[in-house]
Amino acid sequence: MTDLPLLSARGLTKFYGERLGCRDVTFDLHEGEVLAVVGESGSGKSTLLGLLATELAPSAGAVHYRMRDGAVRDLSELTEAERRLLLRTDWGFVRQDAREGLRMGVSAGGNVGERLMAVGARHYGNIRAAASDWLARVEIEAGRIDDTPKSFSGGMRQRLQIARNLVTHPRLVFMDEPTSGLDVSVQARLLDLIRGLVAELGLAVIIVTHDLAVARLLSHRIMVMRRGRVIETGLTDQVLDDPREAYTQLLVSSVLAA
Amino acid sequence: MTTEQPLIALDDVSKSFTLHLRGGLELAVVSDVSLAVAAGECVVLGGPSGAGKSSILKMIYGNYRADRGRILVRDGAEVVNVASAEPRRILALRRDVMGYVSQFLRVIPRVATLDIVANAARERGIGQQEAMERARRLLSLLNVPERLWQLPPSTFSGGEQQRVNIARGLAADRPVLLLDEPTASLDAKNRAVVVDLIHEKKRAGTAILGIFHDEDVREAVADRIEDVTRFASSRAA
Image (cartoon, rainbow over all chains, first blue to last red; front, top):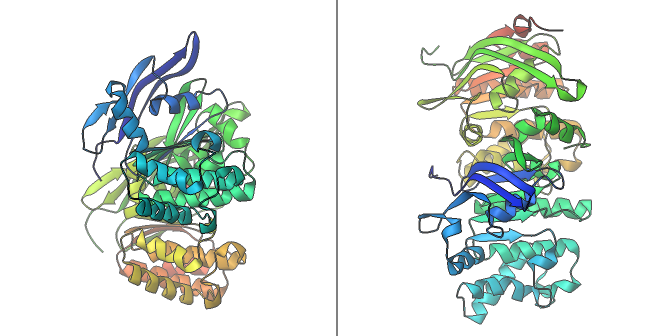
């Protein structure tokens, strides 16, 4: 375990014109750490995720990332080619709406294989073998490899997104509400799968969720956001069992059983 | 008795809850808690329910925050103040140094009982084969029927789940063990097994801080009893 963070955000701020997205967010993330960003709609958590994943440009502040070669880079200074390579290899992004994270007209095997081809894999047999291995790991039957995700259930689509993202062995995965909108039993299976893979692969994850039970199950640390600011941070079980801020106490007390 | 530095040392630790949803009501829990636990020693927290025994264990584990004072836990040559440590330092302590056993099993869906216990040992770097052997031994000692071992414990009875939880909590060799009423509602036969296992841990040099409701267990395992009522908050409402 190296002591250098994998990612560090300093003073990250985003305004949309006059409107505040998020303000002055500072934190470090180390390899293997799972950080949950919780808060209600409009709290700024999705804006923060967009800034970290370089999908949005900050109004102020910076994100540094330790690349695979060990060099620590300011993400705003990457070339477009470097940024795209990072997104396709060392990072994953699991989206709430699978239609944004998958290619709906492409087969399940193709969705997984495509990421490998993007990083230079050319041998059809190897790509198909890797794809079917990953489909098995996310519990999608081998017989569905040539079907498109259009015919998949919501839970299967999310599992396919996960396979597609993990096939290149990323070190950091962003997740935006990956389980919301799914039936409770489907959610539980997906969370269990994510938890197993994250631990097995030692992934660093930044997961945005409004669901404290998801944060409890998956994350080591929590950041609570409200009105664009981080109002409380700490160990997940500490923040949930001994919340300090009034707003966090309200959030925790509003859940039936977190 | 060893003369080296204690594994756990609390130094004037205070804790209260501020209930913002109740108009900022201050709920004092404990004040100026000072106590120490050495290697191979079992210290039991005594006092009536509501005296703050469980809160003290939770503060040591980093589950509750301390308002004031220092909570020192020794990790090899290093002494870490849990009250001010970074989350990842506390997580490392939990992995390498501190185990916590409550009376409740937080059920892990879909994982077989034997694997739950073996995985707890593996987290501490014990090899797969030895981890499985330990898991089998603990589950048999604790009278969890072998036909259940390959099943996830979510469908087990409360008592069976509790014994799986104890097996999991004792599977690894961490130098510090926090026991929050692990024997509550166990029958006499299984209480006796837990007492034996605690003695085994003490002989291995584990520092144990525990809460035991049952007097027979308390008498059997305690080197000292710390009465928590003397840490009652003077500001208590």
